[in-house]
Amino acid sequence: MRYLLDTHTFIWFGENDKLLSKKAAKEIKNSDNNCFLSIASLWEIAIKFGSGKLILKNTFHKIYTFLSENSINILPVEIDDLYTLLKLQQFHRNPFDRIIISQAITGDLTILTTDKQFKSYPVKCLR
Image (cartoon, rainbow, N blue to C red; front, side, top):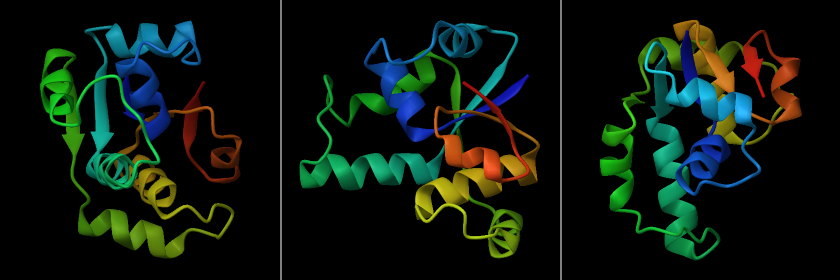
């Protein structure tokens, strides 16, 4: 399977937070799966971390090492993702979530998320 981690899913995985379902953690750890984190998620984390709205157990700089150690690939935003974004209805107003949804649609990825608003879009989700 090919999974795109929502920002909170990645944070919970990295922080070993019990809010992350065992099912999602198992899928991320499964070496047969390809897991991705959007560059938009890293941007969101940097903004919130820099403003003090997000507290992490580790430093922001350790995220890159963590991604590599856990075989999570950074997914760039491509022009096709933006074309998909332009077609999305406004069910979700968070711009970071909207680009993640667009990337999942364009790349035929399943999003690992607990965000119930994602179900309003033609995207596969796993909690």
